[in-house]
Image (cartoon, rainbow, N blue to C red):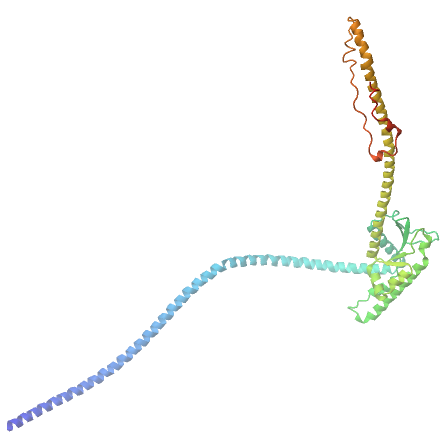
Length: 418
């Protein structure tokens, strides 16, 4: 019992020691586990930090790699672009050179343009002075008349007409009138041209600048209407002079020449019935272009009349030549008849020689052999007859009438040539 109890107590004590040792070990293990757990957490945190750093490093490395790849690609693209743009750069350089040259030329031309503008300004001033002087001269009736006559002569000469041949100036007619010009027409006719035109109102109207003084438009219109009225009055005066009565074979018309197109245009604009009124007074208003067209037509008519005269003369000469050909044919026919008669007489002579003379010569030769008559009975008297006869005329132009000699140009009877 005691032993069992001792054993039990011993076992209990041992169990207690074991449990105590186990408890102590468990406490130590717990502390160590806590330390390990703390170390594990610290290691895990460090590992997480390291992984984060590694990920960041990898990301940075990838970024650097991508950046390097992008830079390499960009460099390659830049090289390609530079290669592609090399011709463009060369062209741009050439363009730059051309721009430089153009800029230099522009500067030079600008200087020349400035010089030309200055010259143009001086010329404009000179033209203005000349225009003012011309306007002042045209207000003088005598100077205006001289200018109109000069312009008329220039237009007529431009049409190809000659002074004192196709036209005459300041001709005194049978009734003492002196028109400015008389133009000769085909067929011996003539027409009068007058170059005196009233221009005072027109010149005053042209002095009004509507751009600078638009309020004077009514005044300008009034002056142009006065110009049209003055021209209408001049037309009436020309019509009343009846120049055609004092010229032989002249149409009932006188040409009123206006030295400038604008003179007639301004008058017709203000008075649209002016042309009809002039024609009713047997007056034709003509500006330089109109008169030139008329004179060109007259020049053509002159040429046509000259061609007609030449054709008529050629026809007369042809008729005369045709008549003379008939006379020549009669002479040729007579000559042929004479030749025919001569041939017939020649053939008769040859026939008589061969049939009558030569046989006698041969008989003499036979009677007296001592006489050598071979020269007579040989080639000396052996003359062949003529077989050809003159050709008879057959052209009707050469046979105006039956010639009696033609009846003699027939073949002679065969007995005559025997």
